[in-house]
Amino acid sequence: MKDLHELFNTLDGRGLATLVRNGEVTPGELLETAIERVEQVEPGLNAVSERLYDQARSQASGSSVRQGVMAGVPTLVKDMFTPMNGARMTSGSHALGEFRSDIDCEIVSRLRQAGCQLIGTTTAPEFGVSYSTESQRFGATRNPWNPQYSAGGSSGGAAALVAARAIPFAHGNDGGGSLRVPASCCGVFGFKPSRGLLPSGPMVGEGWAGLSTAHAITLSVGDSAALLDATAGSDLGAPYAAPMPATPFAHAAGRDPRRLKIALISAISPWPAEPEALAALQHTAALLETLGHYVVPATLPIHLPEFLDATFDIIGSHTQGYLDLLGKMRGFPVSMDELEPRTRVILRERGQLSATRYISAVESMHALGRAMAGFFEEYDVVLTPTL
Image: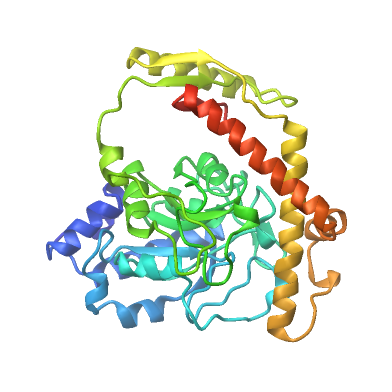
Protein backbone atom coordinates (compact mmCIF):
# COMPACT_ATOMS: atom_id res chain seq x y z
CA MET A 1 0.00 0.00 0.00
CA LYS A 2 1.34 3.42 -0.94
CA ASP A 3 2.19 5.93 1.78
CA LEU A 4 -0.30 8.64 0.83
CA HIS A 5 1.32 11.34 2.94
CA GLU A 6 4.67 10.64 1.30
CA LEU A 7 2.98 11.03 -2.09
CA PHE A 8 1.71 14.48 -1.08
CA ASN A 9 5.19 15.36 0.17
CA THR A 10 6.92 14.43 -3.09
CA LEU A 11 4.44 14.77 -5.99
CA ASP A 12 2.69 17.70 -7.59
CA GLY A 13 -0.90 17.63 -8.83
CA ARG A 14 -0.11 15.95 -12.13
CA GLY A 15 1.82 13.23 -10.33
CA LEU A 16 -1.10 12.47 -8.02
CA ALA A 17 -3.54 12.53 -10.94
CA THR A 18 -1.44 10.01 -12.86
CA LEU A 19 -1.74 7.58 -9.95
CA VAL A 20 -5.53 8.00 -9.96
CA ARG A 21 -5.85 7.43 -13.70
CA ASN A 22 -3.63 4.34 -13.42
CA GLY A 23 -5.77 2.94 -10.61
CA GLU A 24 -2.91 3.00 -8.09
CA VAL A 25 -4.82 5.23 -5.65
CA THR A 26 -8.47 6.25 -5.47
CA PRO A 27 -9.92 9.76 -5.41
CA GLY A 28 -11.36 8.92 -2.00
CA GLU A 29 -7.92 8.11 -0.63
CA LEU A 30 -6.50 11.39 -1.91
CA LEU A 31 -9.51 13.24 -0.52
CA GLU A 32 -9.19 11.88 3.00
CA THR A 33 -5.43 12.44 3.00
CA ALA A 34 -5.88 16.06 1.90
CA ILE A 35 -8.55 16.65 4.55
CA GLU A 36 -6.22 15.25 7.21
CA ARG A 37 -3.37 17.45 6.00
CA VAL A 38 -5.51 20.59 5.87
CA GLU A 39 -6.80 19.96 9.38
CA GLN A 40 -3.27 19.36 10.63
CA VAL A 41 -1.95 22.74 9.44
CA GLU A 42 -5.10 24.87 9.64
CA PRO A 43 -4.83 25.78 13.36
CA GLY A 44 -1.48 27.42 12.66
CA LEU A 45 -2.42 29.00 9.32
CA ASN A 46 -6.06 30.12 9.47
CA ALA A 47 -6.27 29.70 5.69
CA VAL A 48 -9.68 28.05 5.26
CA SER A 49 -12.81 30.12 4.78
CA GLU A 50 -15.21 27.15 4.64
CA ARG A 51 -14.88 23.38 4.71
CA LEU A 52 -16.86 21.48 2.08
CA TYR A 53 -15.69 17.99 3.00
CA ASP A 54 -19.05 16.25 3.00
CA GLN A 55 -19.94 17.68 -0.40
CA ALA A 56 -16.61 16.43 -1.76
CA ARG A 57 -17.08 13.00 -0.17
CA SER A 58 -20.45 12.63 -1.85
CA GLN A 59 -18.76 13.08 -5.24
CA ALA A 60 -15.55 11.12 -4.64
CA SER A 61 -16.88 7.88 -6.13
CA GLY A 62 -18.11 9.50 -9.35
CA SER A 63 -16.49 9.10 -12.73
CA SER A 64 -15.77 12.85 -13.11
CA VAL A 65 -12.95 12.75 -10.55
CA ARG A 66 -11.23 9.76 -12.17
CA GLN A 67 -10.42 11.48 -15.46
CA GLY A 68 -8.82 14.74 -16.50
CA VAL A 69 -5.42 16.29 -16.12
CA MET A 70 -5.98 16.67 -12.35
CA ALA A 71 -8.02 13.51 -11.83
CA GLY A 72 -8.94 13.12 -8.17
CA VAL A 73 -6.64 15.87 -6.90
CA PRO A 74 -8.14 17.75 -3.92
CA THR A 75 -7.97 21.53 -3.94
CA LEU A 76 -9.72 24.63 -2.61
CA VAL A 77 -11.27 27.67 -4.31
CA LYS A 78 -10.51 31.23 -3.24
CA ASP A 79 -13.44 32.90 -1.48
CA MET A 80 -13.40 35.97 -3.72
CA PHE A 81 -15.98 36.72 -6.44
CA THR A 82 -16.04 33.00 -7.34
CA PRO A 83 -19.49 31.39 -7.07
CA MET A 84 -19.44 27.67 -6.27
CA ASN A 85 -22.67 25.71 -5.91
CA GLY A 86 -23.51 25.27 -2.24
CA ALA A 87 -20.53 27.24 -0.95
CA ARG A 88 -20.70 30.37 1.14
CA MET A 89 -19.38 33.38 -0.78
CA THR A 90 -18.08 36.11 1.53
CA SER A 91 -15.23 37.81 -0.37
CA GLY A 92 -13.70 38.24 3.09
CA SER A 93 -16.46 40.58 4.27
CA HIS A 94 -19.16 40.56 6.94
CA ALA A 95 -21.36 42.38 4.40
CA LEU A 96 -22.18 39.20 2.49
CA GLY A 97 -23.44 37.39 5.58
CA GLU A 98 -24.21 33.74 4.86
CA PHE A 99 -24.94 34.19 1.15
CA ARG A 100 -24.54 30.92 -0.76
CA SER A 101 -24.35 30.45 -4.48
CA ASP A 102 -26.64 28.00 -6.25
CA ILE A 103 -24.43 27.81 -9.35
CA ASP A 104 -20.83 27.13 -10.30
CA CYS A 105 -19.10 29.94 -12.12
CA GLU A 106 -17.30 28.88 -15.28
CA ILE A 107 -13.82 28.58 -13.77
CA VAL A 108 -15.16 26.29 -11.03
CA SER A 109 -16.94 24.17 -13.65
CA ARG A 110 -13.68 23.79 -15.56
CA LEU A 111 -11.77 22.80 -12.44
CA ARG A 112 -14.36 20.08 -11.86
CA GLN A 113 -14.09 18.98 -15.50
CA ALA A 114 -10.32 18.69 -15.01
CA GLY A 115 -11.03 16.13 -12.28
CA CYS A 116 -10.43 18.33 -9.23
CA GLN A 117 -12.10 17.53 -5.92
CA LEU A 118 -13.15 20.87 -4.40
CA ILE A 119 -12.93 20.49 -0.64
CA GLY A 120 -13.38 24.06 0.58
CA THR A 121 -12.68 27.75 0.12
CA THR A 122 -9.65 29.81 1.13
CA THR A 123 -9.31 33.09 2.98
CA ALA A 124 -8.77 36.52 1.43
CA PRO A 125 -8.86 40.14 2.65
CA GLU A 126 -12.11 42.04 2.24
CA PHE A 127 -12.84 42.35 -1.50
CA GLY A 128 -9.21 41.55 -2.31
CA VAL A 129 -7.91 45.08 -1.75
CA SER A 130 -4.88 44.24 0.42
CA TYR A 131 -1.53 42.53 0.02
CA SER A 132 -1.98 40.88 3.43
CA THR A 133 -4.70 38.29 4.00
CA GLU A 134 -6.32 39.72 7.10
CA SER A 135 -10.01 40.43 7.57
CA GLN A 136 -12.28 41.28 10.45
CA ARG A 137 -14.43 38.32 9.48
CA PHE A 138 -11.73 35.62 9.47
CA GLY A 139 -8.67 37.14 11.12
CA ALA A 140 -5.10 36.91 9.83
CA THR A 141 -3.78 34.10 7.64
CA ARG A 142 -0.26 33.18 8.70
CA ASN A 143 2.80 32.18 6.72
CA PRO A 144 3.63 28.45 7.01
CA TRP A 145 7.37 29.19 7.15
CA ASN A 146 7.04 31.65 10.03
CA PRO A 147 3.71 32.46 11.74
CA GLN A 148 5.00 35.95 12.55
CA TYR A 149 5.13 36.74 8.81
CA SER A 150 2.33 37.52 6.40
CA ALA A 151 1.22 34.96 3.84
CA GLY A 152 0.69 37.85 1.43
CA GLY A 153 -2.50 38.62 -0.40
CA SER A 154 -4.99 38.58 -1.61
CA SER A 155 -4.74 34.83 -2.36
CA GLY A 156 -2.99 34.29 0.97
CA GLY A 157 -5.07 31.33 2.10
CA ALA A 158 -4.35 29.52 -1.15
CA ALA A 159 -0.60 30.19 -0.96
CA ALA A 160 -0.34 29.15 2.69
CA LEU A 161 -2.03 25.79 2.12
CA VAL A 162 0.06 25.01 -0.96
CA ALA A 163 3.32 26.03 0.73
CA ALA A 164 2.42 23.84 3.71
CA ARG A 165 1.90 20.96 1.22
CA ALA A 166 -1.61 20.36 2.44
CA ILE A 167 -2.62 20.40 -1.24
CA PRO A 168 -0.50 20.65 -4.42
CA PHE A 169 -2.31 23.68 -5.87
CA ALA A 170 -5.17 26.04 -5.14
CA HIS A 171 -7.37 28.37 -7.16
CA GLY A 172 -6.85 32.11 -6.83
CA ASN A 173 -7.23 35.34 -8.76
CA ASP A 174 -5.01 38.33 -9.43
CA GLY A 175 -5.65 41.95 -10.33
CA GLY A 176 -2.56 43.69 -8.99
CA GLY A 177 -0.41 40.87 -7.63
CA SER A 178 -2.90 38.73 -5.72
CA LEU A 179 -1.43 35.45 -7.00
CA ARG A 180 2.15 36.61 -7.38
CA VAL A 181 2.58 38.41 -4.04
CA PRO A 182 1.46 35.52 -1.78
CA ALA A 183 3.37 33.06 -3.95
CA SER A 184 6.49 35.12 -3.31
CA CYS A 185 5.78 35.41 0.41
CA CYS A 186 5.25 31.66 0.75
CA GLY A 187 7.86 30.35 -1.69
CA VAL A 188 5.54 28.75 -4.25
CA PHE A 189 4.65 29.50 -7.89
CA GLY A 190 2.14 32.19 -8.83
CA PHE A 191 1.34 33.16 -12.40
CA LYS A 192 -1.11 35.76 -13.72
CA PRO A 193 -2.39 34.92 -17.23
CA SER A 194 -3.22 37.54 -19.84
CA ARG A 195 -6.65 39.13 -19.68
CA GLY A 196 -9.34 37.27 -21.59
CA LEU A 197 -7.53 33.94 -21.46
CA LEU A 198 -9.55 32.48 -18.58
CA PRO A 199 -13.32 32.86 -18.07
CA SER A 200 -14.80 35.42 -15.66
CA GLY A 201 -18.49 34.62 -16.08
CA PRO A 202 -21.28 34.39 -15.58
CA MET A 203 -21.22 36.74 -12.58
CA VAL A 204 -19.08 39.39 -14.30
CA GLY A 205 -17.80 40.04 -17.79
CA GLU A 206 -14.39 41.17 -16.57
CA GLY A 207 -12.81 41.90 -13.21
CA TRP A 208 -11.45 45.37 -12.48
CA ALA A 209 -11.72 46.50 -16.12
CA GLY A 210 -9.74 43.46 -17.21
CA LEU A 211 -6.97 43.79 -14.62
CA SER A 212 -8.20 40.78 -12.64
CA THR A 213 -8.16 37.19 -13.82
CA ALA A 214 -8.40 33.77 -12.25
CA HIS A 215 -5.73 31.10 -12.14
CA ALA A 216 -3.86 29.18 -9.43
CA ILE A 217 -1.00 28.96 -6.98
CA THR A 218 0.98 25.76 -7.51
CA LEU A 219 3.97 23.79 -6.28
CA SER A 220 5.32 23.36 -9.81
CA VAL A 221 5.45 25.33 -13.04
CA GLY A 222 4.17 22.23 -14.83
CA ASP A 223 0.99 22.16 -12.74
CA SER A 224 0.35 25.82 -13.51
CA ALA A 225 0.71 25.15 -17.24
CA ALA A 226 -1.50 22.05 -17.10
CA LEU A 227 -4.21 23.94 -15.24
CA LEU A 228 -4.06 26.70 -17.86
CA ASP A 229 -4.60 24.10 -20.58
CA ALA A 230 -7.60 22.74 -18.67
CA THR A 231 -9.28 26.06 -17.88
CA ALA A 232 -8.31 28.50 -20.66
CA GLY A 233 -10.76 29.72 -23.27
CA SER A 234 -13.53 32.30 -23.17
CA ASP A 235 -16.94 31.50 -21.75
CA LEU A 236 -20.31 32.14 -23.38
CA GLY A 237 -20.90 35.84 -23.93
CA ALA A 238 -17.46 36.99 -22.76
CA PRO A 239 -16.81 40.61 -23.81
CA TYR A 240 -13.47 39.63 -25.37
CA ALA A 241 -11.09 36.69 -25.54
CA ALA A 242 -7.33 36.27 -25.74
CA PRO A 243 -6.10 34.04 -28.57
CA MET A 244 -5.27 30.47 -27.59
CA PRO A 245 -1.66 29.37 -28.13
CA ALA A 246 -0.72 27.16 -31.06
CA THR A 247 0.74 24.55 -28.70
CA PRO A 248 -0.41 23.57 -25.19
CA PHE A 249 1.01 25.50 -22.25
CA ALA A 250 2.21 22.24 -20.71
CA HIS A 251 4.27 21.52 -23.82
CA ALA A 252 5.83 24.99 -23.72
CA ALA A 253 6.64 24.63 -20.01
CA GLY A 254 8.38 21.31 -20.60
CA ARG A 255 10.72 22.24 -23.43
CA ASP A 256 14.11 23.91 -23.26
CA PRO A 257 13.88 27.62 -24.06
CA ARG A 258 15.87 29.29 -26.79
CA ARG A 259 18.38 31.96 -25.78
CA LEU A 260 16.29 34.67 -24.12
CA LYS A 261 16.84 38.41 -23.94
CA ILE A 262 16.06 39.33 -20.34
CA ALA A 263 15.39 42.87 -19.09
CA LEU A 264 16.98 43.37 -15.67
CA ILE A 265 14.98 45.91 -13.64
CA SER A 266 16.85 46.81 -10.44
CA ALA A 267 14.38 49.40 -9.11
CA ILE A 268 10.87 50.62 -9.74
CA SER A 269 11.08 54.22 -8.56
CA PRO A 270 10.36 55.77 -6.10
CA TRP A 271 10.84 52.71 -3.88
CA PRO A 272 14.36 51.26 -3.74
CA ALA A 273 14.66 47.52 -3.33
CA GLU A 274 16.06 46.05 -0.13
CA PRO A 275 19.74 44.99 -0.30
CA GLU A 276 18.78 41.35 0.26
CA ALA A 277 16.36 41.46 -2.67
CA LEU A 278 18.94 43.15 -4.90
CA ALA A 279 21.52 40.52 -4.00
CA ALA A 280 19.07 37.76 -4.94
CA LEU A 281 18.29 39.59 -8.18
CA GLN A 282 21.95 39.81 -9.17
CA HIS A 283 22.53 36.17 -8.24
CA THR A 284 19.60 35.13 -10.45
CA ALA A 285 20.82 37.30 -13.32
CA ALA A 286 24.27 35.72 -13.11
CA LEU A 287 22.75 32.24 -13.08
CA LEU A 288 20.68 33.03 -16.17
CA GLU A 289 23.79 34.24 -17.96
CA THR A 290 25.62 30.99 -17.16
CA LEU A 291 22.65 29.18 -18.73
CA GLY A 292 23.29 31.07 -21.96
CA HIS A 293 20.72 33.87 -21.74
CA TYR A 294 21.36 37.55 -22.48
CA VAL A 295 20.64 39.77 -19.45
CA VAL A 296 20.42 43.53 -20.09
CA PRO A 297 19.79 46.37 -17.59
CA ALA A 298 16.57 48.12 -18.62
CA THR A 299 13.88 50.54 -17.47
CA LEU A 300 10.17 49.82 -17.67
CA PRO A 301 8.24 52.25 -19.93
CA ILE A 302 5.81 53.10 -17.14
CA HIS A 303 5.14 56.36 -15.31
CA LEU A 304 4.45 54.86 -11.89
CA PRO A 305 2.24 57.63 -10.41
CA GLU A 306 -0.03 57.52 -13.47
CA PHE A 307 -0.18 53.73 -13.28
CA LEU A 308 -1.07 53.70 -9.57
CA ASP A 309 -3.64 56.47 -9.94
CA ALA A 310 -5.41 54.63 -12.75
CA THR A 311 -5.24 51.35 -10.85
CA PHE A 312 -6.89 52.73 -7.72
CA ASP A 313 -9.54 54.57 -9.74
CA ILE A 314 -10.48 51.28 -11.39
CA ILE A 315 -10.40 49.26 -8.16
CA GLY A 316 -12.49 51.81 -6.27
CA SER A 317 -15.10 52.09 -9.02
CA HIS A 318 -15.44 48.34 -9.43
CA THR A 319 -15.62 47.73 -5.67
CA GLN A 320 -18.49 50.21 -5.48
CA GLY A 321 -20.16 48.51 -8.42
CA TYR A 322 -19.81 45.12 -6.73
CA LEU A 323 -21.38 46.46 -3.54
CA ASP A 324 -24.25 47.94 -5.55
CA LEU A 325 -24.80 44.51 -7.11
CA LEU A 326 -24.67 42.90 -3.67
CA GLY A 327 -27.29 45.33 -2.41
CA LYS A 328 -29.62 44.36 -5.25
CA MET A 329 -29.05 40.66 -4.59
CA ARG A 330 -29.95 40.90 -0.91
CA GLY A 331 -32.67 43.53 -1.26
CA PHE A 332 -31.11 46.45 0.66
CA PRO A 333 -27.96 48.53 0.13
CA VAL A 334 -24.61 47.88 1.79
CA SER A 335 -23.80 50.50 4.42
CA MET A 336 -20.33 51.83 5.22
CA ASP A 337 -20.72 50.45 8.76
CA GLU A 338 -20.60 46.90 7.35
CA LEU A 339 -17.20 47.45 5.75
CA GLU A 340 -13.64 47.51 7.06
CA PRO A 341 -11.79 50.84 7.39
CA ARG A 342 -9.51 50.12 4.43
CA THR A 343 -12.49 49.46 2.16
CA ARG A 344 -14.27 52.57 3.39
CA VAL A 345 -11.23 54.72 2.55
CA ILE A 346 -11.05 53.29 -0.98
CA LEU A 347 -14.75 53.90 -1.54
CA ARG A 348 -14.67 57.44 -0.15
CA GLU A 349 -11.69 58.39 -2.32
CA ARG A 350 -12.37 56.38 -5.48
CA GLY A 351 -15.84 54.87 -5.32
CA GLN A 352 -17.89 57.75 -6.75
CA LEU A 353 -15.86 58.86 -9.75
CA SER A 354 -17.36 60.59 -12.74
CA ALA A 355 -17.79 58.54 -15.88
CA THR A 356 -15.16 60.62 -17.66
CA ARG A 357 -12.59 60.04 -14.91
CA TYR A 358 -13.24 56.30 -14.96
CA ILE A 359 -12.86 56.20 -18.75
CA SER A 360 -9.64 58.20 -18.39
CA ALA A 361 -8.30 55.56 -15.98
CA VAL A 362 -9.17 52.75 -18.37
CA GLU A 363 -7.58 54.61 -21.29
CA SER A 364 -4.43 55.15 -19.20
CA MET A 365 -4.26 51.41 -18.62
CA HIS A 366 -4.69 50.74 -22.32
CA ALA A 367 -1.84 53.14 -23.12
CA LEU A 368 0.38 51.48 -20.53
CA GLY A 369 -0.51 48.10 -22.01
CA ARG A 370 0.57 49.26 -25.46
CA ALA A 371 3.83 50.58 -24.03
CA MET A 372 4.53 47.23 -22.38
CA ALA A 373 3.62 45.39 -25.59
CA GLY A 374 6.30 47.42 -27.35
CA PHE A 375 8.73 46.64 -24.54
CA PHE A 376 8.14 42.91 -25.03
CA GLU A 377 8.90 43.26 -28.71
CA GLU A 378 12.49 43.84 -27.56
CA TYR A 379 12.67 41.64 -24.46
CA ASP A 380 11.43 38.12 -23.79
CA VAL A 381 11.42 38.21 -20.00
CA VAL A 382 11.48 40.84 -17.25
CA LEU A 383 13.53 40.10 -14.12
CA THR A 384 12.75 42.28 -11.09
CA PRO A 385 13.21 42.30 -7.31
CA THR A 386 10.35 40.69 -5.45
CA LEU A 387 9.11 40.36 -1.91
